[in-house]
Amino acid sequence: MSALWEPSSAEAATARERGIHCIPLPTPFGIGPINTYLLDDDPLTLIDTGPNSGLALDALESELAKLGKKIEDLELIIISHQHMDHLGLTEILARRSGAPVAALASLTPCLARYEEWMEADDRFAAAVMLRHGIPEETCLALRSVSRSFRGWGAPATVTRSLAEGDTLELRDRTLTVHHRPGHSPSDTIFFDADSGTLLAADHLIASVSSNPLIARPLEAPIDKPEDAAHLKRPKSLMIYLDSLIKTREMGPIDLVLPGHGPGFTDHVELIDERFRLHERRAAKLYKLIAERPRSGYELAQALWGNVAVTQAYLTLSEALGHVDVLISEGRVAELFDDDGIAYFEATSSPTS
Image (cartoon, rainbow, N blue to C red; front, side):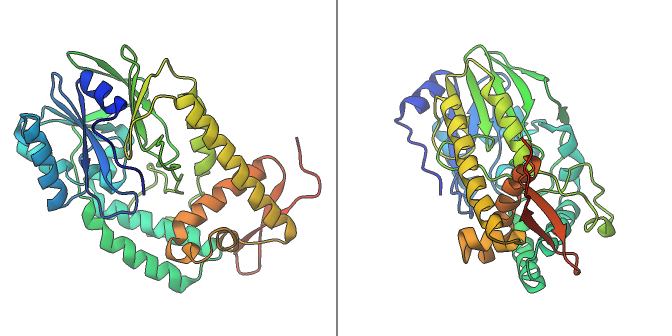
């Protein structure tokens, strides 16, 4: 669970001086509250909306009131990425305020057909789990859990499509849009170069390492169930690491405002630590694979024990992400058994 944002912290004070108010909203997820951000600007802008729950809506209305604002005052809503804790209230807020909704262009059709999109995602996740050794009964149980969580999200109508390099012009700042896929395919961050403020959503969080979940490509058809087993698995961790490199080279950045937990100042130091963390995990996985060939599920169990059952897709995504790195280095090969289950073995002559 991520640490809570402290309103008295130096980072929170700096954000307020820049007209940015962090409004944490409750979620039902282990990560804890999600940070929405009110930009007291023209237009009055809210970045992310929280999960679709009365509790989150009440909290948002209460915090806005403390700032002398109400939902009906909102003039622009921005969605950072596709996860339900960041977008669940979007349609409700847009309807009450009349505010336009801005999000990455590729996310627009997915949000419009939310239920079908989530079902397609679940089919894809099940196909990935089965291919990498997770038992069918576990897959079925996890699909049931996923369906029960869908209500925390909701369909939304995007009225302004965003792309890499676009700018959002406000009275007191210009936000440059940067697409940073990895944690999800739609991760989008917003940079105010004049003040050095980065609104990073879940791309970069100080208190926890953002998990690059294996996600169905946004451009994949929603209405073709037969595609689930044949879609190529994105190399989410490698995509994420590439995004981190791009963010590391940005700057100067003196304040990062994340989607969870407190703000922070040294993005370079944090990103370097994330790379060291992933190197350590890759080394552990290579050692396991060198002992004997293993499936992705076996690797996840070896690292996380029973958590690899209760959070099978999360841990499988983590394990496969590091295996992808090892494969790219020529240290590991992916093979398939007679049942079509993938397994990994160490190569005898890794390339440089």
